[in-house]
Length: 314
Image 1: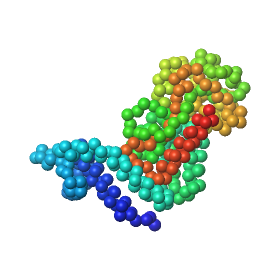
Image 2: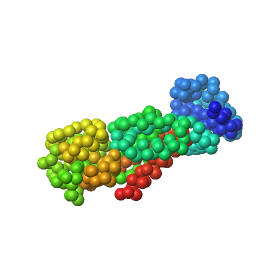
Image 3: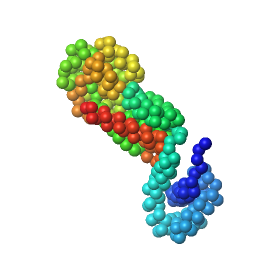
Image 4: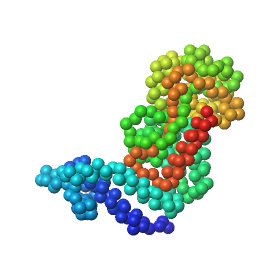
């Protein structure tokens, strides 16, 4: 049975609710519109704001016939609301964490290659320490990972680091250059780097929806994909693994997801010559405006450690 919230927990939460109401009233200009946006009764919002004003000893709003307008004191208060709310959310999560992680569910979206070893290793570590926590890990295209986390469909996202206006926070990253994966017997296996003209005579395999738009938009790579006849196309990394190991084609991918085969000498990875594709990075993303549960925070920290380990191995 979950522990009841402490008096401090309840008091902090009440203040956080009042501050959220204040911010929404300031944004929309009236209690009625704020109530509609928050799906809360207007009277409840008004009571919370009046209580906050009493406790602070200031009037936050001028109540006009046309709506609510911030007073100078309210303007000053509003400047601190957003950071205060983040601090309140963090405090509540940390207070819950002091009681130990008694339960929780962590959801992740990740590009396919990261679900091969990096994500399972992180989940295994957390799962052994906290067997009550449950997990959901789904594969998605890079852009869909970021959109899903921003929309609240997942707690954590692992994808390529690309420019985005989505409300996301990048908490850890590691290099993920694009190169060519092939069997050790391939004629290009011992090249220091590979240009797209070098690949022209050989069968290639493309993985659909696996690379960021920045890679597909890179002119040289885009031209190569347009003129090359892919012998194999798939959105499955396991299919690609079998094709490459069988010596049937060369695939332009990152090393991620092939660490075991590369360490065993079953596959060879050679970097592409294009500087833009060698500069790609992979990152761990979380929502910018939502506090994660203690269990999700722990998974984020573990994933950050996994990425640091990947960097140290380079």
